[in-house]
Image (tube, rainbow, N blue to C red; front, side, top):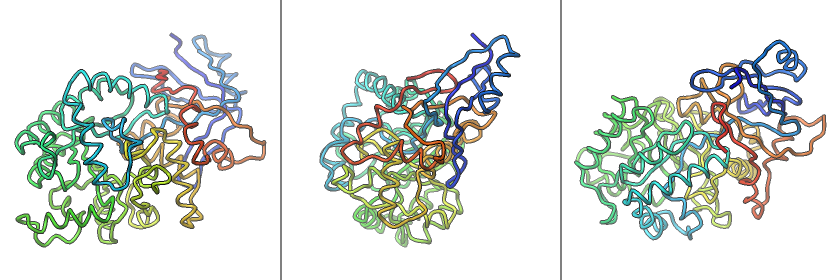
Length: 433
């Protein structure tokens, strides 16, 4: 096996919301280490050819005419909802009750979970996804199977359901606490303590889980303020819970249970007051924005609304993009980027761009997951994580935003094409698709 690897291609390298370098006819030079290939340089092809001439052990991969982007990060998805993504979505709570929860019950069988984890891992890699924050079912083995099969930087949690849940998914409080204690200790930073949401998880279980997660360096993830009727329902429940009678907002419930913090990811966060956003910013609690899941029904979403990233930025709330499979209809983060730009442009946000969408699907996601120093873009010292996309025709005068638009912009009827665009996916230099 060669010590060095050189890839010739055109590269889109996201730097921040407003900057993405488009490096035409460049090369990535990577070196093999014990735990994977790391980038040592990204340079014009002529410079790489000079490097090759001086080294003996070099593998050359010629992707000329193809575009490479960094590996993609999906900060909120349910791997146990893969089969319900196209079910009718008139209402979030009804969709959960009628389709999602009955399907998740299948995962009580270990053989079923194992088989699905293997196939879902292949789907993730085929979409160019190399990491994310993922929800399992209530069963501990839904975490075991996901972490055993998914290749990349994944954190996974079993959902906690100790109240207001169907009998077949209802957990005893002590059982829920015991599973969290066991899995958090076993998987440390790969585990996420995961109350499904405040409706289904009692505050004592949440508080216990938060304590255990923070002790072991695990993540915490749950849902927050996805719909208005969900918020009303949550507040109606908690006004009768001892110690929570004076709670005014959804965020306060999680805050009181000690869930907020820099390793916590809140799904959705669409209907948040300035006070809530301020608190999320203060605690550096991240929001996973799921535009395809929250999109109107005619766009195959749940019709929940649109996260206001401008307000989130004002309060310095970290955020990244996510698919929310199965609320979202497609597993491709390229589809999420397309929806993000389309919805925000219709709302009149003139600064929304494909550059921003790519950054929030790569580097921002890696940051939220705590791996931003080693992944997220093509900086020297980072792992060789990349996605090869079918090249588009572009002019020499095209800037990165022009090229990204040609790659990503699709009409509703053409959204299925995203999963066909990925030629290959690499994680730490190993081809996983």
